[in-house]
Image (tube, rainbow, N blue to C red; front, side, top):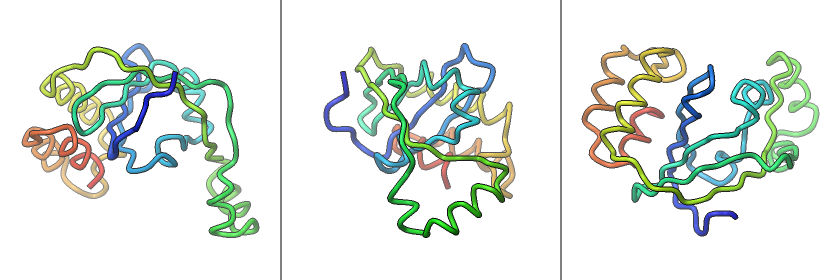
Length: 155
């Protein structure tokens, strides 16, 4: 069952049972569905994802097994540049995966902040982008809403 009316930005967290913990913010449906192929396999084929919308609602998600190439991106950059980028990035093919989302009982903002801080502390590189780790952690601590928490990891 697909969740009705997805609100963006949305914060997505991988399952705590997987070896690779990751949090990201999706600003659109395309970003929500996009996933590098290697990440798809590392995160248990996108099973056990949790998504938090700006109002704090929580949705559990899993991949349906359906995927497609991002044709809009290929048209945008051109097929030659797209193939060159795929080869240059070590065959990091980004696919769009069909996801099923089901609303589940939500978690408090404080619990989610603690979990995101743990993810950031374990592997700061994707979140810091040449900023000190303390700056990112301070932004996470100050976040008063799920939307601010989402913005803290993406900015």
